[in-house]
Structure formats: C-alpha cells, structure tokens
Length: 298
Image (tube, rainbow, N blue to C red; front, side):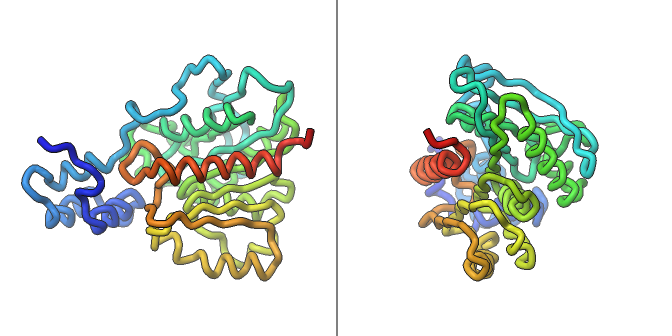
C-alpha cells in the first residue's frame, strides 16, 4: 500500500480536519464529509488517522532527558480551578536563577507534544511551566478526542485565570529571576494574547496562530508581542487586520510573521500540517525574542 502524504489530500480535507479539531463538526460529520474525497484505499477513516497526532513517534525532547530536572507540580489558582497541575522543567546547566516561560497548550489539555515544547523551552535556558487546564476534570485523559470534549466543559475565562496563576507561580519560584514570558498554541495563542492584556509586568508574549483579544483590551497590553500566523489559516487570520490596526493605533511593541503557504498548527510536529522549515524558523524567532526581553544583559 502506498504511504499517504499530505500532498495526497485536497485542501478541503484539511479544512474539515481543522473544523473537527476545533469542535465545529463531530467525528461522524468529518467522516461523512471527507468520504467524497476518498479514493481507493484512502478512505475517510484512513485520512482521519493520517491527520491525527502521532505522539509516540514525533518528540524532539523525551521525558527523562538527562539535561533537565522535570517534575509535575501543583499551584493555587484561586480565581480559576482552585488547584492546578503542571509540568515544571529546569535545565541542569545554567545560572542559579533564570527567566521563566509559561507554555500553554491547545484545546485538548496538556498532551505529550506540549510537554515536549516545555522541555524545549527549558533547554533554551528557561524555567518552563506547562499547566494542564484539564486538572479539575482529572487532567489530560490520554487522547485528544477525549481531551477536547473535557476542555469544552470548562469556561475559557476561568482557564485564563489558571494560566495567569501559573505565571504568578513561576515568577515567585526560587530559581526564577522574576522575568516571565508566555508562548501558546491555538487556544494557547488566545491565552497568550489575553495574558498580555491582564499582566502588567509580563515580560513577553508569543502567540502561535492564536485568536485575538477584544480590541477594547489592546490599550492594556504592556508586554512586547511576537505573533506567528499561518497564511493558509483563514479562521484565525480573519481577526488579524483589526488587531494589527489597534496595536499600531496604541503604539504597542509587536512583531508579526505570516508564514507563506503554511497551515494552522504548522509548529506541531506530530501531525501532517507540520512544516519543518516554518516551525524551525518560528521557534528560533521565539527563543531570540525571549532572549531579548527576558534575559539579563551580560
């Protein structure tokens, strides 16, 4: 059987998958609508399996890496869930105190990919914290389908409070310099934008293909922003022109990149939407941005 590649699938199937993973259509609706594009052995079920994350085979930094100290911690979120669980990663080499980075997951809880990203941030020289917004519902359940269903049960503004509390926990950590940034993906991109409107001393915010905040909140942004968008992401990009206009009008410190020809989720290396070159460039820009705004000058 021929190995399926992303070039075998029409754009319409990727659009259906994007709607499915953002809970706009059900699994059955995806399968029904994708079936019109089925050819031979490439059934709708085969396409869905191909598009779904492969966490066991696509991880850059695996759990237990000898260069890191990592543990699951809990912290208080009095305005949110009450108590939260998160992965905390600290590089073994480096100064006694270093800046922090909060890593915010997508709309499915703290899955293995986001834990991997948390470890990557730590190896770049940061204390990194990846909270699990599904903590009050038992945590990430092991599959993204179940994770999405659980996360839909939570109020997104309550989850925002949980991540703000994560920032406060990290900022007060004995190994942290007090300078903390945030990077988030999809839902986490919206959280990152929103944290910039809520935390006066946030050091830097890096939303990846994240929804924009209400424009009346833009004057409250104090943190420098680095925004990553995929060109082929009409759903998220629809709000970008007005957001950029407001950022300019209020003279906010921001930089934005739209990655030509790439799709929503291009940084996630566990799915076919992943683009190696775009992801590498976006991550390099992210770390350089954190280095500029969070690291103390030598």
